[in-house]
Amino acid sequence: MYDEDSMCNKKGWGHSSNVSLAQFSIMANIKNLILFHYNPDYDDSKIDCILTETQLFLEKQNSKIKCIASKEGLEIKI
Image (cartoon, rainbow, N blue to C red; front, side, top):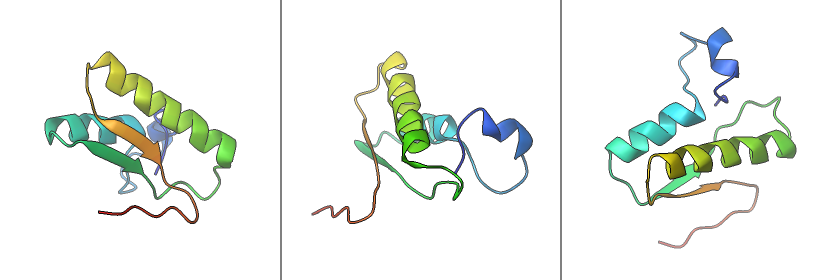
């Protein structure tokens, strides 16, 4: 829901940050991570920053998880 910087003011709200999500994803050994459920105040530019921050975190952890941001109209075939 929030980026890492916003979390300091949102603790206890029942949501987590993109970095926490990435860490849990590594622990769960997933292959693909799709970011969604953004703060409604975030614009496309902010979401792009969150995606970049998440991808950089995953790279620093030597993770091979593929991370993308969801968007209106996104369809994923399983």
